[in-house]
Length: 89
Image (cartoon, rainbow, N blue to C red; front, side):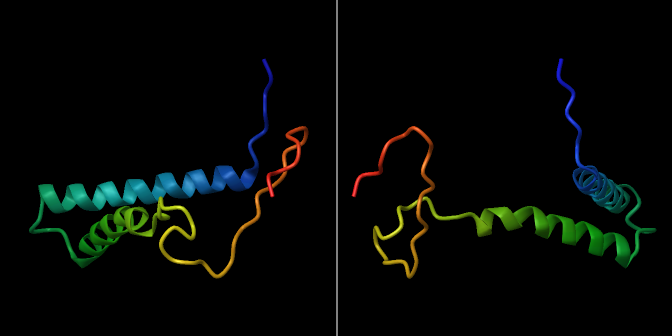
């Protein structure tokens, strides 16, 4: 079995994500279970996390081919794969 080292930056990002997710769940559960004692901080954390969850839906790339209906200003070139031969011109 091969053991691979995980970079410290990746571990830190995972830890930050878990802490942020835990804080969001804490705020949501506090708002649901004891709404009279929950303050504006819990509301802001819950609303902010909910808003961030919608972000990938609105920022997702279009599935249309570039240039199908509107011409793009720049085109990305494809990387050549070794042994794949030449690309069609």
